[in-house]
Length: 358
Image (cartoon, rainbow, N blue to C red; front, side, top):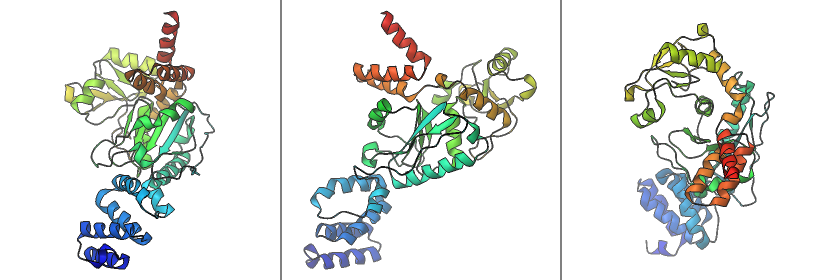
């Protein structure tokens, strides 16, 4: 141990000895110490061991903090896995335009190499899906952000949360309606124009969350908080009716131009937490109940119908305008509200019209 304080070889031997005895924290300490003495391979060992113990984000933060004092750098491959991208390094994952047009444009964002690989796989799977490829949905080229900047959480069983403020400049200067953030680990979600996926997501999960963009609701039991926000008597969505009374059904049929013989009202547990009964308009279990299940013909029809009116889908610029208002950054608020209005979103247009009239 005395030799290891100043001798690289001794520090590495000590680190490997601790590793062999499964003394992982001690091994990590000595690998780091050997790296501080100038050993590049010890730095690689330290980072990979820390990845096992603490995860990618914590490892990236540690490296970013310590790197100015080191006389060496890890391999480019390892840096990419940690999401510490060179400033001038852009992604090679190109965008895609649907033959059906680009009524809705999604901007993919990643923060680590795994997310980039996942997005490329998702985009190819989308193009090969006979239902999804019919949609007038296009993808812009992927954008990379440092993992320590986007800072997406990695707790399994918890909803992924990121520093979305880091995306403000992108939202203000790039033409798209929805963000797709492929980063972190945990539970996926869709809120306010941001579709958040874990960086190991598959197409069934992506499809489920995309359906939320079009206003489809979950057909499984919601938490009391979520159910209270969504479930109101007489309310309906493309795939859900709150109540099966004749008036609600007729309003649903009229709104979506659906024939009554196309509908088979089937009870689902979505709103049970608030004492209301919800019904889906099809009998079959589908992707809104279980990710891996299929997309019924009626849902495909309704999804295509919603995509014909993309201006009615809230763009992410409108949400970022709300965030700017909270900060009382009125110049940014106005720019974002104008961007949302340019995309045709009626509430943004109304706000600007009222502002002009005042």
